[in-house]
Length: 117
Image (cartoon, rainbow, N blue to C red; front, side):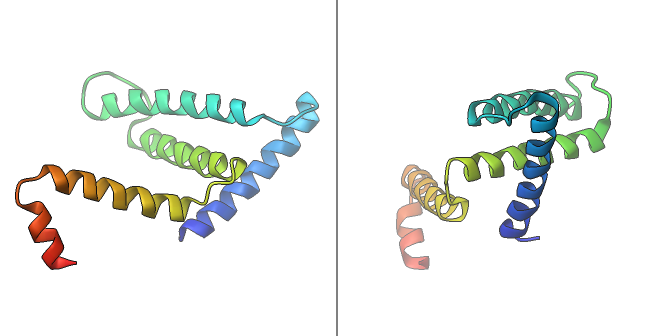
């Protein structure tokens, strides 16, 4: 699946949640509420990672870890949509910046990187 495929599928689920929230609560979630939901998912993910590393017991095992990673990805895709962020361009730009930052701190990496690009 491409990032665009993931985004489209995430938006379909987002629309279903909007319909459910309108029906059950009379309103949809705000951007802030999506962020708070994401924070809850990240907390759950942290516990599952600790479980994978043997630092705590959390039920669900590998399937729960996979589920929570997918939940977090869904939240990132939806937050990007709700804030009008083009993830492809933002990701490419950020990876370029991070690559330059890390290479600048590695001895001899600047010369090697310049000759390979």
